[in-house]
Length: 220
Image (cartoon, rainbow, N blue to C red; front, side, top):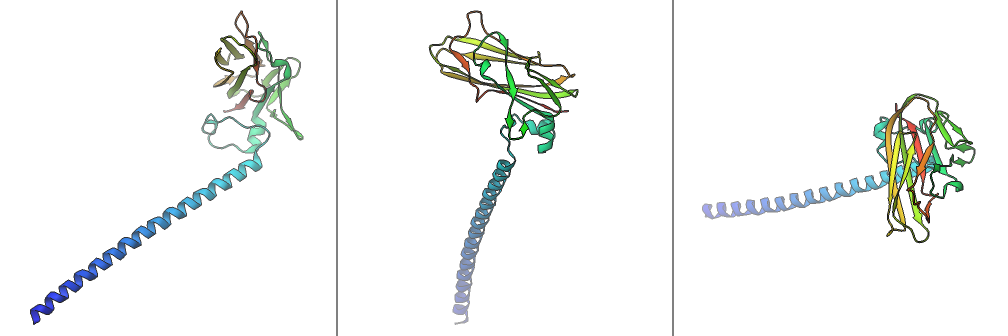
């Protein structure tokens, strides 16, 4: 009899151990699921908050997403943007693609403008001049649209020999977009944007005003 009791006690202990192991597994799985759900909820809430803050601070134009934050050592304040940032858009006179200086102008929104206090803009020559010497990040966003039968060709834009942008236009496409950027030292010289087309021209290709822009800001 004592031997039988010992065998029963061992079996009972093994069953208890198995129950404890199963409970522990359920507890661990439940904990992992709870933590994953909590982290996901916090991530969603964080994204919503960031979007809300950006929408409240966003002006009528945006800085380009070219890794500019890393260039200036983090996210700049709105005051930094307005002082050191300039943004230009083409006027209606620049829709035709010709060998000419592009007529671009700052954007006015409310009582403000997209021209920071660090810049001078000449409305007659359509030239932009930084007041401070330093390294500047410059970019061009271009969209060219074919409004009829168009031939292939290359459109060239040049900003004071500091930034060059070549746009290859295909006869099989109705629109072409291109982004070009550079970081270059500027010594306070005036800059214009010159457009060059092939000798045969680029008939029926037009510059898309809403989606074309030029921007510049002081890096260092």
